[in-house]
Image (cartoon, rainbow, N blue to C red; front, top):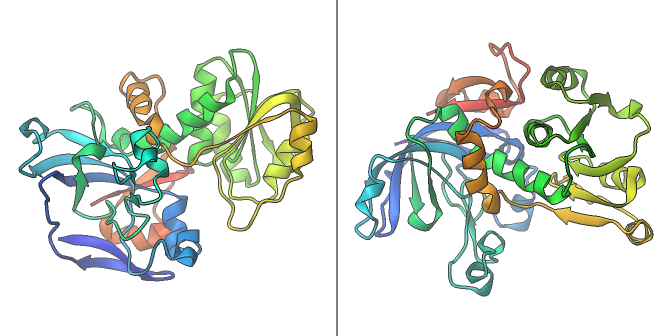
Length: 335
């Protein structure tokens, strides 16, 4: 089987690897589409925090935004799953501890993460094996481009839900990348006044096409009464800025993680009576994301800049977009 393998920082290639072994409670899926995200790029560059902590090691196989069709099942899996179009949760809890039994399996200390943690092979390959408890069925006629956007949409849905905003209230989103724009699309559909803030003019120009209330460069944020902020960046300075800008009594949602610690003055949280929420995983938002996408409430396809073959993975991960004449933040791989 062909799979993309990262062997060291900035070094990866398509290799022949062993065929996946299907356990009694596993499903074997032929991968149709995989999205590349910031976490994948951090693994490629060697900057991902799990590499420093020992929770991930080279060589590794990435890919956790994906969809495909079930081609084989383990002996204990219901036969109805054969030939189903599916995706999966990224977080694979132990299913035994109190966190898992309480619905927080995505926070299990003994969890695997597909294509991310403890060597669990990712979807940037021709096939992937997933345990039955993590598989999610997709509509059979769903476009694979949409199927591979379920995971980031689940993250964005959780972030917007965490703002607790109502129609007519104002949301500022830092970061016009995939998650930031998905958050904006969901919020905009709910009647929330959406403003996006970014740094690069190219990404700001792309965000302007969606008709949001405002798209602003970081150095020129207008004076607004801000009812909630979503930080969807990797910038360590944004959390402190968010605390400064937010209206007292309101909420800030953090979904981006910087490579170095983000330092804030916790006194500001107390003195402004703020609600702070972190979003680690799409897990609790995946079912809602599938419903959102299957009902065409939002369409994430304009975010996809292009689709390349498995052999083009290194170029995508290194930032080489030659041949892709589209400013969208997301690139998909078709194994």
